Image 1 (cartoon, each protein chain N blue to C red):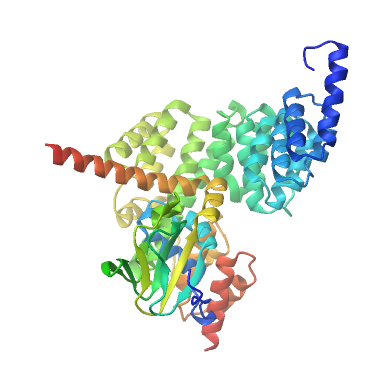
Image 2 (image 1 turned 90 degrees about the horizontal axis):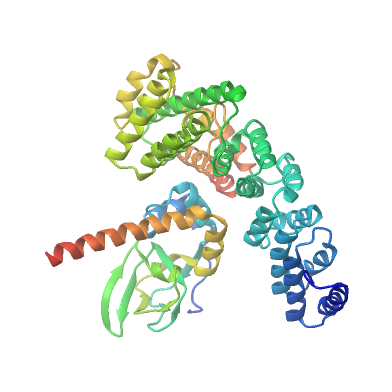
Amino acid sequence: MKSGGISAVVAAGQKLLQLLASSQASEREIAAAIIGELGVRSFYKPLLTLLEDEDDDVVATAIEACGKVKNEKLANFLIHNFLLQGKHEKLVMDALAESGDASIQTIRHVLFDESFSRKYQLKLILVLGRIGSAKAVNILEELIWKLPAMQNNVFHALNNCDFVSKPENRREYRELIYRYLGFATRTLFSINELEKQHGDKELIGALYLEMNKIRDSVMLLFSFVFDKEKMTKARNGFAINKKENIANALEIIEIEIPMDISLWFIRIFEPGKTMDKCMQLTAHFNETLTYPSIIDDVLNEKNYNYHRWTKATALYSLLNYKGEGRTAWMQQAQKENDILLKEIGQKGLATAEI
Amino acid sequence: MSAEHTHHKKEERLLLIEKVLLLKSVSLFEETPETVLAEVAEILDEEDFAAGTQIFAEGDVAQSMYVIFKGEVRIHKGDVTLAVLKKNDFFGELALLATETRSASATTESETFLLKIDQEPFYELMESRVEVAKGIIKTLCRRLRAQNEKTVVQNK
């Protein structure tokens, strides 16, 4: 059909129509594959029909074909009828990524509409990172400010696009780096306070995981603003998590990053005791933290968007807490949609009644 | 699988967070952060067995991993006991990654409460959350490295 004359196109077209109307699923699957191979943007309607086929293999082949046809209407159908329904997720994500800019408008709509679940928004952020076009990068940059809870995922997606910030935007990114170092400092002081007083192993562990995530975000931000290659090398050093690799990573940061940032970063993330680090960081943090203030900060996301696991560990530690505020926190958790938090809230209230 | 297993009594149910903490103690998941295990915990099934119930027999097709929350499980070949597993012990972890036949039988010694992960939902989760696979790959790499080092030492 692609290279033949008019008569070949007509004959092949007729054969394709027969395959599309066939009662045999295997023949409809072939039709879907052929439409994909043709890759004609305007020839999308038959795929809309095949996407609703009763046979799962036909649907799967039609989804793959959508990636090759690269049509906006198909991308919209894939997102609303499959991805947001939790069906054929991986195939759909591959097809959307292959569709490139044809997927962008619908993805943008879902990402900027707060009624859609965070779970699916995360998947679409990943797809944008795979598309990697200028339009995808623009949306991701907007998302940094629009979806603060997903900033780390957005940074990863931008990193996949080999993103480097424009010189006129660098100030904003540097401010963001400062904010993250502020979050890290607060988290470190929270860990220190918990280690000193309460000793909630799970909550402390969760806060250390938050520290790793903050470090990862800062490293990605460094790579958007400073020498990308060297920052990637430093980030990999932290990922290996061995003494000598961490030392090399810190050395790169000391050399490459301006001192006002690098010194602060090194004091927070160099190996050592939390208590000693906090003593060195008093210039950056002068609040007095208590167990209830830490719990309040985590559960109400006062300074940072904590992971659901961190919130769960904070609630779990409250099960043994007798002080003020316990009931209010448990009532709040009981209303959550997230079962991880909800059931701790329920247990907390049930045990309070006893 | 025996018909004697029942759903665990509601008041004794584990919270999801407790399932995560239990999973973290399984060596296969030791490199997987709890933030990711919180999703693995959602696909765990809870199963209760009376004492003396056979969980599986040698030669059965294996597609599940079990973690003991309460009770004791005897791993045996016929009458020969290979091990008696207790709370927080786990068995069948490799069956989670590749279908194989059970190399021994497992029978409860006392009333037992198990958490079970089936291969199919676990594979689906790995497909949508690459971090789950990353954690397991890290653990397997670490084991392989340790095994290689052991082999080198033995060959010296």
